[in-house]
Amino acid sequence: MGLVTPDYGLLFWMVLTFLVVLYILKKFAWGPILSSLKEREDSIEEALESAQKAREEMGKLQADNEKILAEARNERSKMLKEAKELQQKMIEEAKQKAAKEADKMIESARRAIENEKEAAIGEMKENIASLSVLIAEKILKKQLDDPKKQKELMDQYLKDIKLN
Amino acid sequence: MIIKKLTKLSDTPHKRVKYAILLTFILFLGTSSIFAQHEEEKHGDKPLSEKKFDPGHFIFDHIGDAYEWHIVTIGHNHISLPLPVIVYSEEKGLNVFMSSKFHHGHESYKGFRIETDEKSPNKGKIVETLSDGTVVRPIDISITKNVLSLFFSVSLLMWIFISVANAYKKNQGKAPKGMQSFFEPLIIFIRDDIAKASIQKNPEKYMPYLLTIFFFIFLNNLLGLVPIIPGGANLTGNITITMALALFTFTITTINGNKAYWTHMINTPGVPWWLKIPVPLMPIVEIMGMFTKPFVLMVRLFANITAGHIIALGFYSLIFIFGEKNIFAGYGISVVSIAFTIFMMMLELLVAFIQAYVFTLLSALYFGMATEEHH
Image: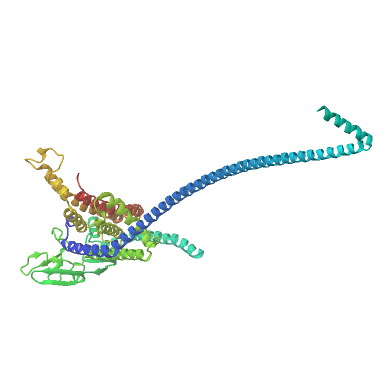
């Protein structure tokens, strides 16, 4: 039957044409099409990958930032604590120093007062002595105004001497 | 910017509408022009009174090859495109002349004529009457209707895909446009769902072949549905064309067959020894399978496409079978026939894609089997 009998003339043209078309399409159509498709897919994949990478990078950066911030916070609190301690110490020291100084000052003041007092007492004694001498002199002067009394005293003295 | 966007938006539906109109037009022509072609049969070579309508002839004339491309018959005038006849005979050497010299097969030219004897195996082919009176078939590489259709379809194929490739170069790094975006999903489908899914090792190597056969078969299936010139040549429903395609698949499979493939063929692993020795039953089955695979490819495409054409033509024949009995019965049945043929055309559109897909998929599977590494 003609329908199912292959015709070699047509077969000849078909094989020839098909091979030529296959070659031409491979070179000028499928090659460029497939390579551009691949290129595009690769570039999309690359873009997605780099986006993912950037996201990760950002996450890392954020974590880093957090860490740095935490560290800074720590540092600050530590510094504050240290400053407070230092201040406390300084105040304490100042207080102690002040107290010591005050003690010293009080001591020296006391000593000065003591000296002054002693000096004053000495002076007072001297004054009192000279005053009493003066008074005695004045009294004596006044008592021995009268020669009678002088005589009497002398007698007294003499009497005392005799006694000795 | 906005204007550009607007024009783009309006562009796509507009194009879609254009395609839809084109498709309906093709379908409409499909139905009407087989109708027209039939009239030629009716009023054809001989007057109606002498020749009864023969649906067998009518159908096989339409799905077969021819030395001229019949376009239309008006009254008794055939309008057809004469095609070059290229024959080489031992007696007369190379002869090239136009098929119009045969006067639609009624006359002989330089001892060559188209065999009209129903019983001859060369019926419809060019035969040569030698000087001693014997009739032989010369070496015949004429540009027949199918060959011209082949040239036209591959030119169209090359034009389409080279311009698509140029679009890729022009739109580098941009979204696909127009024809490019129509073919891109198909190309990706073939690459990912046919080639990569079936071939494990280096599927890219087979891509040009798979793409070429897919679009060759698909385009020719569609052109076969267009009944007017340059379509209508039933190329993929021709056993020679499907044989050539199957031969390519067979050749590529055989050339690329690796050690595992041949081992599987000769000494199938996992099969009881008594199936191989002393009677090599399995090797025989396997080697037969090697040939039946492409044979089935050949027959499947041929049978599917030819069957579709035969059914559509059969429906049209009904009109004339009934019309010969009663003209009104012919008109009446024509409504049914056209409705059925429209349905068949729709089905054929689907078949056109499915057969192209099946042929490509099976080819890819065979390549995959030939290159698969067994562990």
